[in-house]
Amino acid sequence: MTKQIHLAAHFPGVNNTTVWSDPRSGSQIDFDSFRHLAQTAERGKFDFFFLAEGLRLREAKGRIHDLDVVGRPESLTVLSALAAVTTRLGLAATVNSTFNEPYEVARRLATLDHLSGGRAAWNVVTSFDAFTGENFRRGGFLDEADRYTRAKEFLQTARELWDSWAPDAVAADPESGRFLRPGGVTPFRHEGRHFDISGVFSTPRGPQGHPVIIQAGDSDEGREFAASSADVIFSRHSRLEEGRAFYRDVKRRLAAYGRRPEDLKILPAVTYVLGDTEAEAAERAAEIRRAQVSPQTALYFVEAVWGRDLSGYDPDGPLPDLEPDLDDGVSKGHAQFRGDRGAVAAKWRALAEEKNLSIRELVVEVAAPQTFVGTPRSVADEIDRFVQTDAADGFIFVPHLTPGGLDDLVDKVVPLLQEKGVFRADYTGPTLRDHLGLAPRTLTTRTEEIS
Ligand SMILES: Cc1cc2nc3c(=O)[nH]c(=O)nc-3n(C[C@H](O)[C@H](O)[C@H](O)COP(=O)(O)O)c2cc1C
Image (cartoon, rainbow, N blue to C red; front, side, top):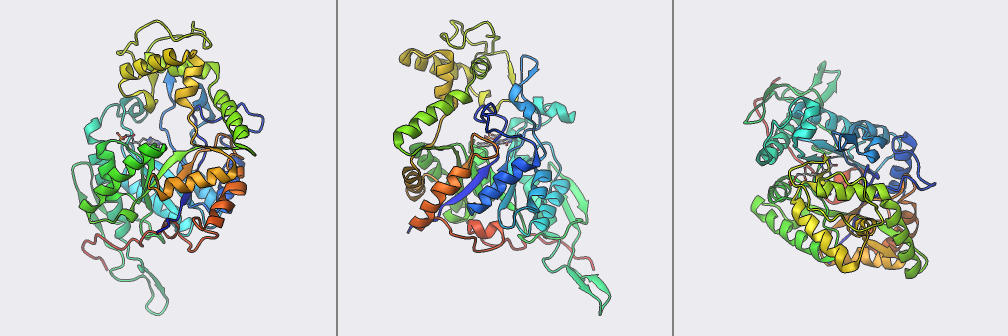
């Protein structure tokens, strides 16, 4: 059976893939930038608009990572404003489960769901590091092993809060003089390892019941969490073969939780570059990659892996003839470099030697991959091939320009997908759950009733 493709828009973030130096680049923080990108996505009938979140600006050698200065506005505030200038587009906020509390997050998400008429989504992230924790005076308070036990209990608690209001709790009946239907709102009581709270939730159940849940972790625990609890996975496996392996792995985990493969959509982050011919697209893609990796960015990447100050090195020269310093965390808050830096350094050195690459050329190779490069027709065909051969259920597009980075995709590629019959010509329902083809969320947890 031909699968329908799901598309989402990622607002360009604070990383090297955003080409802020391009003359067409606009503000990262003005509302008009958010509005342009969201309205473009809605014009293209996308499922949702996605905002990432970082709770601490990254640092290298005691200095704020330059690109982060463009800002990390608070997702739910931006999305609430976007709810007023869009009508169908889903609105997805990244909200951390380590540094927040369930009552507050549940209230804000239910509010966004109301304001938007059922279009809210929550990307539950678990970043737990002590560096970020310092901002909250709780540095290192959560072990890595506990990031998902807290996330799971956090989500469970939020679900209990949303379910404490029946869908028809607000009667507003002048005859009886009752605003609330008796028994429509129940007190909640959650006793667990991470949360011990009780009371009455303040916000009526949103139109979707529960917002759509997105998960972006990649570890084994992250995949299990997604299989048990998420509606969408935001994945970094955007190559065909690794995408298929990830897809198979995650979908096979669903049965253990009584769920069907179609209950969880897998959407890798991807980029695209178009040209009138394949050669023109390839040339443009190379130019963009070079713009994404300035000489300073190239050194920053290598310093972050080597754990050393390399400011005296020439970005157009060879890699330093030094072993990485694995004890020193030169770069803080950059998730990409938290793994085995020794292994990454060895891999980069081997690649640089094999292809005779300078520091900058190496970073262009490893840090600025592009997914779909070609004519609108070949890009549409590739997108469809990835989805039909189970490397994905769709994609979250990360444009390199703000705010016009999706214009071409929507104007030139989306119509071809619609022509093929693999992408909607129009929205068929009002809510994000409708766009994703997800079942409505019914009440799952009820406690004693109050009248
Ligand atoms: C594609 C992708 C996007 C992510 N975006 C964010 C983000 O915006 N903010 C954040 O704090 N963590 C983000 N993360 C981190 C994860 O959500 C997760 O919390 C972290 O990777 C730890 O979980 P893991 O060990 O299962 O990977 C992202 C991860 C992936 C794969």
